[in-house]
Image 1 (cartoon, one colour):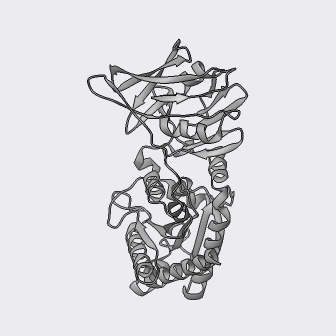
Image 2: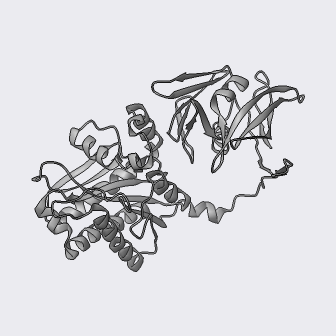
Image 3: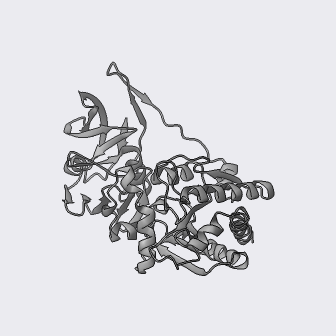
Length: 389
């Protein structure tokens, strides 16, 4: 059972999930503190339970406002304003940004928010110094409801310390499977370059550092962008490195560059991000919904990692500049979707231009790929030293 304790002048409530056998849809019955019926809200069951934002705002707060064009939703609970966006995992509460594990979804013109994430964030934010307590609920097929108590334990100081140790690096070889990425003049596929360099980098780290490395993919398979950062978060990564190869119409373009998430309006950076984000079409995600406001929200959510992301990005460029015979294009910012959900310092590295015949030839060279991996490895080594000092 989920228990949401709100300020007295709003009213305390609790939720009771009840089965409604119709297209996997269920409802939440909302009762007041005297068990008086307040209303029912739709619940959508997919991989997890999602609560109707519209119903929640109508029953609990002062209603909700939906902009159908931008697909932005605002819920009002007394003086509290909660902002959400369709297909985005970020929530803004009183100008403070939080990230959910899953995105707000749309179903039959209704918007649904992941229940556990939503109430957990409300609990963290707090409502006028009142707390939100909740417990998980399971619903059996025979419609019996079983309450599962959520254990409360003393903080394990060792585990708490480990949360801040630089002990896990997530390496993300861009594209894969049905998504080849960019294809060079001679037919070289970006997905093959990124996987090979990622594996070389992982081996160097495993051999020389006491740091765990996890590849988002270690073979030629397709993986959704949001699943890459979800894996990184689930594995408690301390650094997320997404590896790619660039491509433009101008075959003379060359060089390496490292990106961090941001709202840079540089035309070349915007084009690069748009090309890497094009995989959203394969996922059935409408990339047009990723507005400037969404990007600003994501950038705000990662503000705590911005300094470290920029530090590492600069180190990558510095180390590559020492070894790689190509143009140093510097550190840039752009709206890469794959970086939006990473709850850790994160960068996207463009190794070179596969669209340039000369650079494509170099990117096909085993020694050149090893040089690229070595450069990133030494950047990690320096970054680790900065963290330890």
